[in-house]
Length: 389
Image (cartoon, rainbow, N blue to C red; front, top):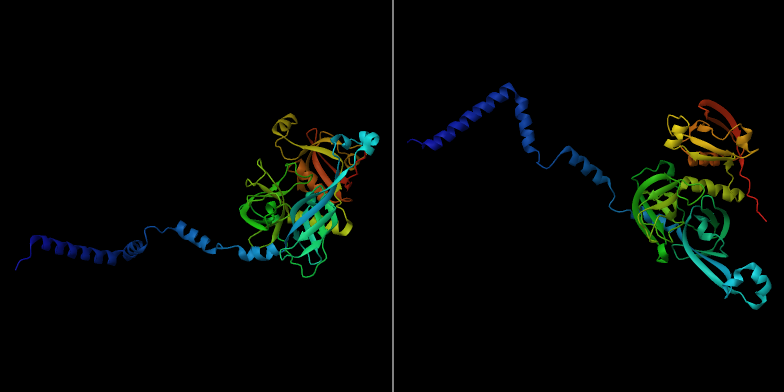
């Protein structure tokens, strides 16, 4: 019985294919193995997809383990300030009040405000912002567990907008310090505080930038910028990392509406710790000062002074008989390094000098009239401004 022509053709093709595969196996066996491996690989899988899946597998599904212990150490701060008002606004003028004050009786009012703070030691020290407690007649702290305590001011520093309070209480929760100097853009950041007085709130974001300055918030600025929502009342609260460690004290927001727009600024914990230590030990912060007025080098200034780049700072003025004057620094000098550290700009250099403290000898190098020079300057304490009478 003969098979139909179509069936015969199919059987013949299968036989030829089998012979061809057998021959290929004998000559190049690795080709057959490679082909089989490709056939078994899913069409949607790739090396990139595998890497992404690996990263996602290590990302936490929740930050509750980091937030829960940290939140216990973040407190609400309520301040009260007694102010005197006159019904007639003209009586606010001390001259008019001298002549007509007997006719106007002042009215005392209590002005209250709120903010946040962070318990950073078992001894009861609380870090917060200076602008929260400035001028307050009474400061009350509410802990996460419902306990209340009256706080005293250990010290405050306007130049960094930091303050240290003290409370007397047992079994205080403490927020461990993190490493703000190694914070990277893209790191997870969580803000904990009391926005608008609604109660303790946690918001999530990332570190948007580091080393932010020239913001006009305080004299010495080195802010961590974050897009974690920060609102009024969050000031003085904690910025923590994904491990629940303190990396910053929330200080300010950029906003046109008064609410969060994803641009918040926190004081790095390294700076906060440095200020806190001095406030606790001596009640004030001592900073290095050499008596100069400096400015950044713009492209126009670089071209005018014949400089190759804009790195460094230009000395615009020198206080007579000040440390810089005694060290031979002159207006028009371009400072390139201070004690081996390259000067990136004026604010960077002033901050570096301030951190050194008084009584430190600095080796300063730069350019004067296009020629290199080097000198030594000893820092001192910035003199208090004289009050004009």
